[in-house]
Image (spheres, helix red, strand yellow):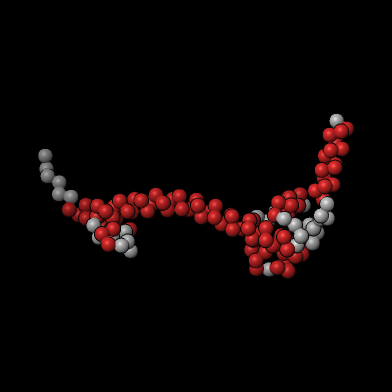
Length: 134
């Protein structure tokens, strides 16, 4: 059996890992064994971090929409309900951009949607009347 010297292949593999570990502090960027552990850990966290970032941005958009909708006299859930019932197909990201960057358009968006304060009470009465009929 011929002896295989892995010098070039092993060096390329180590250089790849050390390249990914560039910028890490101390031996985490210099020693292969420790850098290899840190790189694999970083790649694991980067996967879950991408998922967390989506959650975080959705929370931010909802908070911004809620604040802006309260300025026009609605809370978040009623605003979303009215938008869906009127078939306005803007997602939360676009609604948040409108609320922050263009308050005039946000106000015009809210005008036909604004409902009287007793809308919820009227709906409860309708539901109770339907139940008594049945």
